Length: 397
Image 1: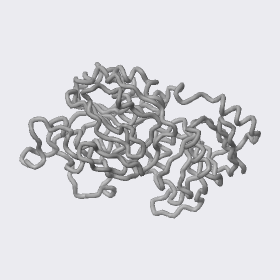
Image 2: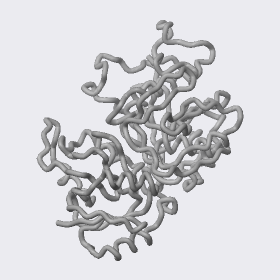
Image 3: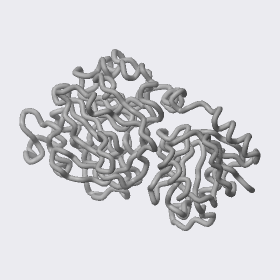
Image 4: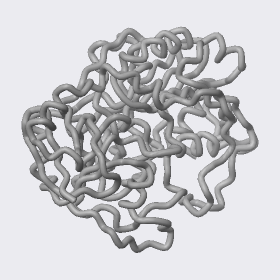
């Protein structure tokens, strides 16, 4: 069955439909990962986006229950050069076309994804529509132009949990680099704001010794403090960081009251709460191969990223230290407010499915709290009176 991808600027790509038949509009973006398509599909940060994969073949290892990062896919549509209809992997439970069909996600294959990527890089991310039911090009371009912009949709409200819940599972032993590694004996109560949180973030927080309670994005600062946590986490999520203004006000009230760690959208919301500004990137950072330098020790990590906005470093307060920078375009990838014990990074250290260069940041945040990861007799794991985040990622236990 024929399918069409139409962009708001009039550019049209014709291909073949796979997944669900139908029509969906969204912001078209590209991702440079060579694998991890199921984690991408189920990452709530992609809510409302039509994702094009630059890797030429997608779907060759199928899908399975374990790799979902949330309860369902959140992309508006999926674009690939070639889709594999015969997956080969011992973990596979169904093929990618069947998975998308089951979740009512339209896909389009057999288009020139290199040309699409070059077009987005030149013109920027834009509204688009993928359809296998309407083949009138003029009609589709008009629908793409009339679709609501992502910045006008309350996307966080669409993906956040409705009630608080406890999370008590770590990374499966088979996935760990060191299966013999033990969880910390001292547990730390932590409240995690769900702006679109990924499951692997929760697993790594648990493994680092946090007792995690996940709360809806609209939770007030007073309700958080009433739970008497020793730390707060601000999750990833979709859309314009200025849209959930209520979250910015909540975080502003928490800064200085309790240690905070933010990732991706959480990084942007924390910056806004400090009085900084954010801006929309031309085509965003999406992939698993973005080099980021830690300015504190000049180490470079290959990172997983997914964001369309960035923090303006010049707008951060003078006492805030820029800790990480993207080596592709020099954008801000992390900052630290030592006095407030606020740490945030723009990229994804949980890196599901990978790479895992930055997983030590979860341990770094725990050291910020001044709580040893293991009993005090393990002296090599302790720091001075203020075990600050200046410690390098490589020193993470």
